[in-house]
Length: 362
Ligand SMILES: C[S@@+](CC[C@H](N)C(=O)[O-])C[C@H]1O[C@@H](n2cnc3c(N)ncnc32)[C@H](O)[C@@H]1O
Image 1: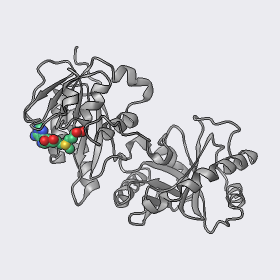
Image 2: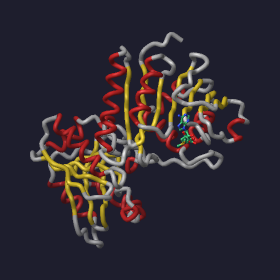
Image 3: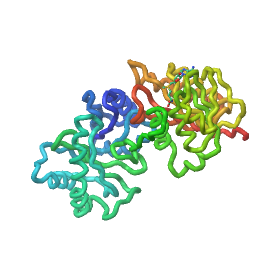
């Protein structure tokens, strides 16, 4: 297998391509990306047989910013006959060596308006295809979320890529997108950004400990309160920093203290803050620096923040800001984990999560 497909937000194919090219170079896997603007995916073509499997195994998926999903392509099929789409897919997989037996099947499309029209078909097609794949031993008889995932990506009617990802190195979500429902009582749609960030960055098994009731949080650039809403919903107490107006419904909970102040100057009154979240529209380098300062001073244990993307050179800019932040933290002796992702609910921004592993002494 020589091809890897990566899903991304439509319009961000070049950023996604730059990223996979860098990662492949680092592993000394040689190849080139094929980019079709606004297609919602990138195909990376390796020169050497077997390298697609290396990429989906050895690139740590969590380190990819712009890719929502990646899988090794075992076959690409065109003009599937409407009378029998299944047989050509099974035949193509039978010819290909090295496809692992999978524990799950996802029939997907790229995230574009045109491709999404195929989703109804994808849902219907999944049932007979799953049955047929089980019959051929391509899928285990029962769903097993620890085993590799079989993906089909329909880019047009009758045209698809079929392949697999590894369960410990992929997105656990269908199409790489967590399905979230907008809570009708939230003050702004951006509430979904923070909720998605929790799903993507914090393993569900750790939510009770790391997103626990009674914790203190600081929300910089909080108004009208979509992010604060998520924290309040998890029974936290929040310092909301913004010169604007907070939604009255949040103030009425008694869990929110509104400070009409500059987020760059605010200092928490007590050193008991677990979460720092920040959605201020500001230069990304300035925000990254501020987040680093909070972590270094021990003012918070975990930080979740947006970096607004510039019009040009988006990938280079975020890479630089993240590298600077990592250097800043390391130089100050902080042990940390950092992840960055262009989330489904992000547009011209990415979301970054930093967890400090340095003991704050409280
Ligand atoms: C995108 S909005 C935040 C939306 C919010 N996260 C929500 O979910 O409702 C950005 C906010 O940052 C605030 N802001 C920008 N610069 C700021 C600063 N220096 N200090 C505090 N707030 C700032 C703006 O007033 C604005 O309300």
